[in-house]
Image 1 (cartoon, one colour):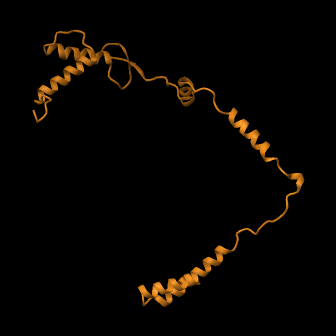
Image 2 (spheres, rainbow, N blue to C red):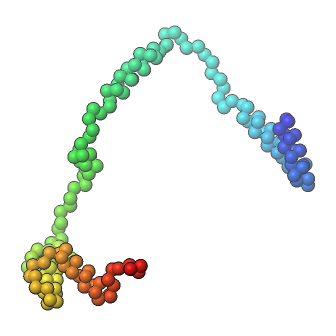
Image 3 (cartoon, rainbow, N blue to C red):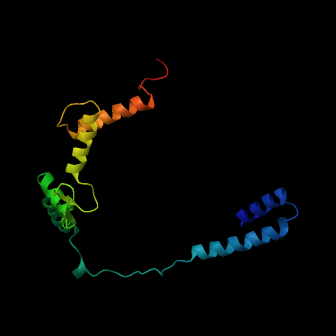
Length: 162
């Protein structure tokens, strides 16, 4: 009850107009809450356990502890076993969209450019540009293309501080 009185005195000090109704509402809710919190949810169950049902706890715990120790893996799972477990049922799918290239006759995937024709076209482009290497790798072609684009855009790749 002292808590209710201290609450009402604090309210009357801070809010003099609202002190009387607020204090009564606060005291009502406080008493209802304290009454609800003090009642037990389940009635106490007090009965004696017969001696015939007594459990031997140390032996049960010993058996459980022994099985826990045996359940630990002895070696680290190999990479191959992990991958086979994670990738189970997710194998490679067969590619069914295969066509013949109309230009060169090689087999290619549908709706994609033929890699042989593209390589030949890039070789023709770079051979006509002054490079005389007839068989250029794809990475070399990419490097030459990047260099040509840098020259065309006028950037040399240097920083402003130089």
